[in-house]
Image 1: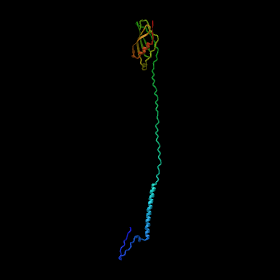
Image 2: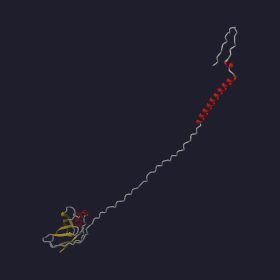
Image 3: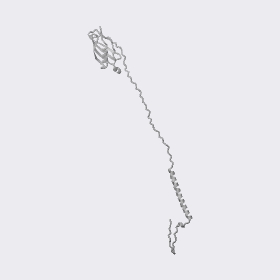
Image 4: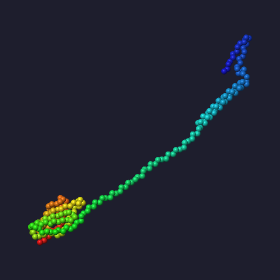
Length: 210
């Protein structure tokens, strides 16, 4: 701070000139003050430069890059397809055992009364019993078939093991032909009827013997 001293009047009325403080200060003291100020300014300036350099250095900090990360692609692998092969089922064979057919021997017997006689025919192993009633105008004749056809056992009865008999009635003409075949009775019913009728039909003409 600079102080100005105004002149004052002396007793003699003379005006004395004013002196500044620097004018009174010696030169050495002024040089020290100037040097101190210069050093302080230099220190502050140097500090500012150091601070700016530090800020710049922080801006240039090297940031290390992270190593690249590689992702392996996920490949979907479907499960192995298993083929299940079923074993073929063996077919079930149904074996139908047919009893052996044997020739049937007809043993004709003489009639007791005129015009009627009965022939009993038994089929072994087939359980088919044929009872044949023949009507004839002559009592002294015997009817015998020219050839014999064995009956065919019905498959259902053979499979189930069914046995039975059939009683037939038919008419023999003068030429020996068989006609008017009728089922008189059978056991079991309608099981062997058709087979018995076929046997009688395929027998052919019957010879009349005296």
